[in-house]
Length: 95
Image 1 (tube, rainbow, N blue to C red):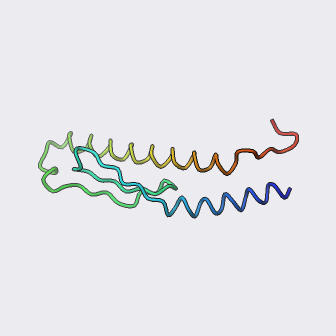
Image 2: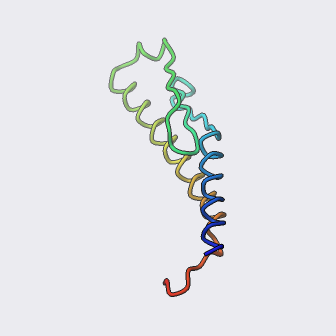
Image 3: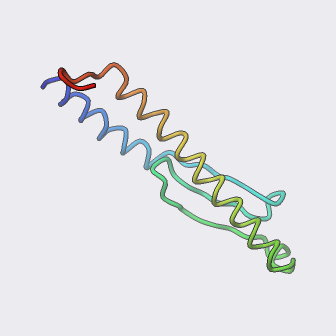
């Protein structure tokens, strides 16, 4: 039981750290910049004024690409950090 309580405290601490970790992902040569934290919360989206003059489909696809890349980066980081906390934890009677 103490092991579970210790892991719970580590997870709570990690969640705070994840919320503070920020990633900046750009797409379209920097025309779109998305900021996201390690908890998967989007912090901002910036689109270059000149880029907005491009074809609507190009802008949409570039924005979508940046959002997907940001979400993937955050998820990858989150899972790797969570694995560090939970590795080695085993519950008796659990598979």
